[in-house]
Amino acid sequence: MPDLGFGLGPDEVEALLLSLRVACVATLASLPLAVAVAWVLARCAFPGKALLNGAVHLPLVLPPVVTGYVLLLLLGRNGPIGAFLDQTLGVVVAFRWTGAVVASAVMGFPLAVRAIRLSLENVDRGLEAAAGSLGAPPFWVFLTVTLPLITPGLLAGAILCFAKSLGEFGATITFVSNIPGETRTLSSAIYTFTQVPGGDGAALRLTLVAVAISLVALVASEVLARRVAARVGGHDALA
Amino acid sequence: MMLSLDLSHTTGAFTLEARVEAGAGITVLFGPSGSGKTSLINAVAGLIRPDRGRVVVKGRVLVDTQAGIFLPPWQRGVGLVFQEARLFPHLDVRANLLYGRRWSADPATDGDVARLVDLLDLGPLLGRRPRHLSGGERSRVALGRALVARPDVLLLDEPLASLDAARKAEILPHVERLRDERELVIIYVTHAIEEAARLADTLVLMEGGAVVASGPIEVLTARLDLVGRFPADQAGAVLTGRVVAHHAGEGLTEVDVHGARLLVPRTADALGAGLRVRIAARDVSLGRGPLGRLSMLNRIEASVLAIAPHLADDGMVDVALSAGGFTLVARVTRRAVAELDLQPGVAVTALVKSVALDRRSLARDQATGQT
Image 1 (cartoon, rainbow over the protein chains, first blue to last red):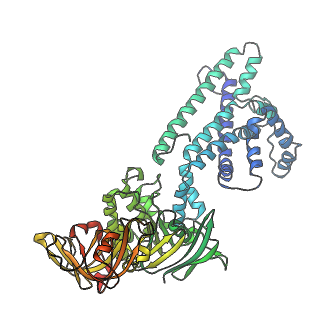
Image 2 (image 1 turned 135 degrees about the horizontal axis):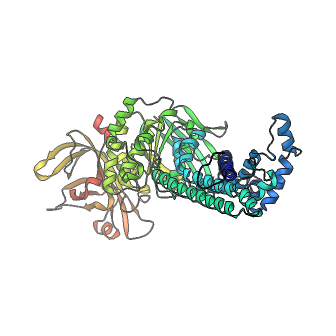
């Protein structure tokens, strides 16, 4: 691992880069599904909607360790879904960095859904009706009217998901453990350093890095949201 | 008929039950708020699904509940302009205008768009965002956007209701030009009699979810049984005439209305041009016998057709007058009826100040102008 400066040791840089990779992939992977689920929750009425709503929000209220353990039961090599993935696609996520992505995505998902759903509920349905009266079929209306109008919500959802992913600890460590270079993310690394003698310095450095990343992400999203809101006109930045 | 509609629809306590036939030109749906005008338009646009009925446009069945036909809005070829314009805030005016072109069955060419931009004076606005437009500019863009999609029917749902008089005056000529330029069925919803009097080829009066009457505006506005359906200051006959002379020195224009001569404030219309004159019932005075010298320039010899007291018993009555080729309505007090001894068949002179026939009472009449 090259020394990137900032006074970080190779282990610390490794944990930082892994964390960034996990957070980015988790955010990008969960966003499209979050849009779909938010759309269903905001626009559709069907029996069992409360159930879907509950299931989506479950990771928000469950102890993260419980969520991680459920993931392990389902997606572990011997779990029903894990075994299926292993046998048919040769994909194993348990104790891999991809597993950390899954844990992060699951934990961040409800936050993204909430932000996007709020944004969707604020969209003026009259604009969609206007687009329909101009001959545009629903999928095109969604792409060219709805999606641009909920961009602030998308950004907010993405940033929340990203932040949650960076900070995710309980579910990750339960599901994929704390393997250096594979699943030892920033949070796991800080925890590990606090558990070994002489690790205080490293823990503090990583803590500062985490604070810096979170601040940058927050400011960047605020700036972007403002810019988008100005373009879209009238809508609140993080509605 | 280019558009025929017969449907019923119930939402909550409100029931819409309507039959409307409309040809090319402007059909105005007129009535108070809550009379079902917007519901009717939404049924044509496909925004509500009627419980029962049929909607046919240019031979194409859009809705037939018996046959189980219900075309979704985007397959109807029906343009809709809303009161609030509903421009896409994230697109500039040009992109708003062109939005419907991609999906049109018969896409507008660049030339068509350029002509429309010209017609609606949109050139200077093309690069702007909707939030930088004034109310009148938004309405014009919304109108243009609907037309670029080349609809068979254009539905205008109180497109001017949120605008002040000056902005209305800015838009109305554009709507008139559309009617004159294209074979387009236009359904225009309003509760403003000036707009109806100015635009309507056919007037459809609505109240409580039902069509009360429909027909040429001159006929409907002169019917005593319908006078009460118009707001008090808006009741009165709409007459069609032809400009026969301009008295430039006096600032007056002379209009021939079925043989009677009316003097109105000077207009810019050419000699021979068709003109609609709305004479509010309360601006008409009645006289009997020799009248002597009066400041009222318009004196129309007529005979009383019928007298109808107001249901509200407010001391007023409406008097229908036959003046040869047309009917006029006068609103006078009960005392005046008694003093003049007005009865059906009595000969009277209807007196109208030219001053009362201001710009808001006058409109170009296309049909008369062409013949």
